[in-house]
Image (cartoon, rainbow, N blue to C red):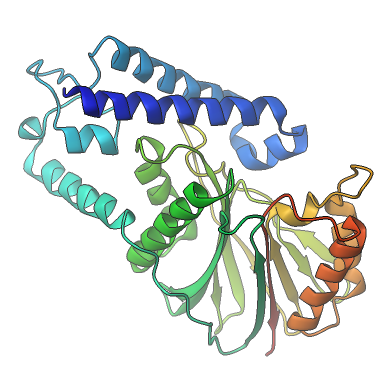
Length: 338
């Protein structure tokens, strides 16, 4: 394998390993549990072990050696999946077609961000707010048609800030808009995205993601929470956190994702946000936290979505006492109109 390709693999894998280790060592226990979801901490250790093995193979120049003929695996394949160990010529025809489709999609992932359009979903009142901590950010939200005549919504947060994070978010949007009509299940779509990202050397961090699909005919909301801050469902007489049903994308080696569904009634308000909300800090170093956010949301739940988000912003800004933000902040509010 060419030294230039090996150098890129070593650089990307080292960055990926270091980001994951630093996050695992410094993140609060609750944040660790949320991002990993029900799969547990052992899955992250297994993923780190795979990265370490690949780094060792890159150092001794054995990475990407075909187990059938002992020749180097194609460079394009090893860059998409650093665990690849079989040449294309040894694949069956169905395997080859599937892999070619994955390679084509991997190329699409690198293309530019599609322009975002405001949603026009009958039966829903929607408002959104996003503020990067730097000039560009790693938060992402979007609305799009989902399979089965449903309304799709996603909110996501890449670990890190700045230009590299924004590029990963651009790639995520490309994948979602390319694949959304191929998957009736949010969990199936998240699992596909995870497979595309997990061993890609360009994907040097991980992403928390909440993906939901609202059926206006039945008012059923089906979602997959991949390690993201749990959205808050505000009903007239109760509140419910939509907690993770799987780990963050690109975080563990043996990720499993599942769908969950909740019925939505007229007047219900769904509040989605990134950790820039709960991790807003006071001048004394105290974090705003989930309990304060829940209380603030309940207090303003009767407001229209736009006014609701403004009230949340005012509460966060007052807590921070005008200090500059240390993290990106994105919030989305959806109310069922009928």
